[in-house]
Image (cartoon, rainbow, N blue to C red; front, side, top):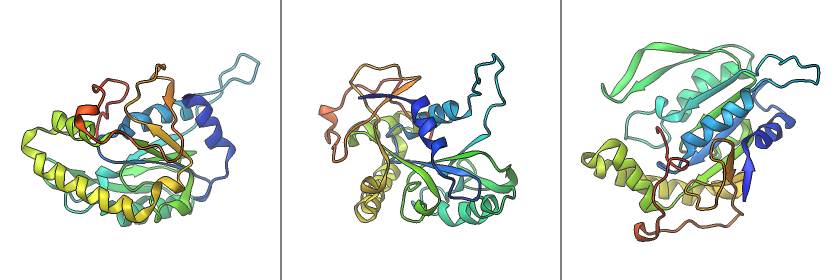
Length: 235
């Protein structure tokens, strides 16, 4: 059923921070599921200024989005980002201090030399595979899992990265299957999202929530056509 990003943002803000004064939202899901698009739209809703009835728009909230792909070692290890993000960003933010990280350069296949600063935000949105995993849950104010059919996810990935990376995608998807089988992420998340929705909605302002236990169609032949409101813009 359609739900608004604004209502979800208000739910986040009504819950307590669990990383010092920072509320953390984890947007988890397999590669190609649509989680990057979802995270961006939720971040926009979280950061919007709100009036108080006097016609004056108040200062927008400080919202930072981090992509776990920026903390990886390429295709090598699914959760290689976790110790780096924890040491470089989460622990400093929990102390009320600024963090910083070196972004992985997928073209050079190594971490970049420059450090990107992360000032303490009001809300930190962490997007990527494993952002709702057991190691992250102690910090999460809210956890989201975005789901989409396997064939569609692979098709989206190859459309973006090229057929030459099919073997890497297939290895990555196998690693995802192993991770999610052992982590029970879905049962721990607060919100489940359909990353390939067929139900009519306003994609810029609404998402389709699905009930616990919902299983996406598994075969490419059954997949709906990829459409802009479900595509993942980056991984």
